[in-house]
Image (cartoon, rainbow, N blue to C red; front, side):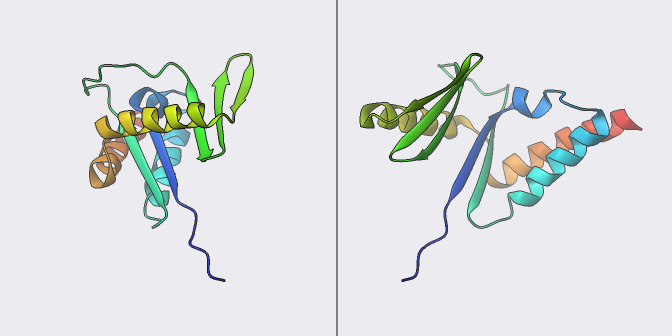
Length: 123
């Protein structure tokens, strides 16, 4: 039996990309790694830029694993959602934010520009 490869989609806000979890050189390297990973055929990276006018705000981080599981991350822990209605809601929410995000070359160009900003800062 031949199975198709899994597909991964990552959607980040610009704030998440710019959040300083390390020094500027490390941040630049991490962002460049994201650009490298975006070249994989089964992996898509999108960035929701600050400049986008989005009528709703993301209230928390969530991960859609498949049609059976979504997790939502809170300060007090992670919540596992298995109800099909909750999963459908989060899939719609993901698609909503995805529609406003930079994708493909726009996303990688944006990521490269942020990495370059960090690199200039680290010099």
